[in-house]
Length: 457
Image (cartoon, rainbow, N blue to C red; front, side, top):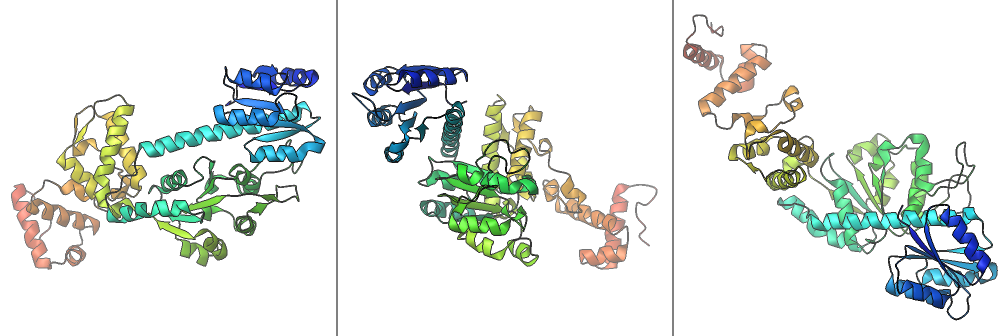
């Protein structure tokens, strides 16, 4: 819970007593003041998470309290209470920085609902502050020309409100780029909301996006705001957008175009101001051709396209990233900073990284946790064996061998792959059958065994 300490300001004793009793039952720390002047005196001495103040009071009114809070305790939220006939004043107060307003008379449920929203708002601010500190505390590592070019474009992209579509294989860092764009934008102090479209059940996606009204369906016991509403004023990250069911895509397209939607079970439109960033690891052209993803939705989201190349295509980033993760995980595991040997660096450079940056981070963390050696050697690096299982060779294992040994390893591996069919093996190697027989004869002689290892007839 982000809100702990609340100040109640009202010249009516019954209202102060009602609010104090209601909120103390929720374990909030409560103080009260009978007018704006007394509230400001308290605020000069103590900090509060939330101030609930009446609009019309003698001596100093709700605007005076709001202005003092915004100037002296900007982290605090202010809720304005007003009679029905003064709603315009409450709206003016919100324009000046009030969080919400309450129309008198109100029930305990009314105030509890608004404070729940205030709690969510405070938590979002806290999460975004943490997000910005993490992003600014660690630079995005880019030594390759392709990544440097992308990073140079990000500040310009962040300045606009144009939708961004980030494509790339899993593990290339799409979400980090999205967070970076948000942190550089004018929306950085507003919510950054991520929706993992692939992880939400099809039956729940609409209500997750747009929220629902009480009684909209079985189990809807109270009204709930969707991600679109929570992200208002900030950025909504539609992660793996191409996994959204085709049946929901028209409604999503309309909401994105109009910046307007209705909660499930409601006909009242809700306007929002959102910046959309979408990601996908699919081949978009193929997804559109196969009627998995709507072309018009793609063009609406693809105003600013970004393609993140796989790690195997930006080898200049591998060792700087490895060093970054090495330092990070050594610190997190309270171990002295380790060093990669030249042979270990070669092993990392020649591995194809099917899991991209995420796989590199996992492997370095595993190496740090399992090995006590100060210098990391190739056999300390636990690469994914599934790569070799697919019939591809991990050439980092050839580092340190002579050319003759490499040639032998290649010939024997090819023979094994072709099930000792010398004709197919020689064709695959691009040599004659006679050359292959001569090579095998030499290997047999060097083995110095009584029985030949290979049939060279």
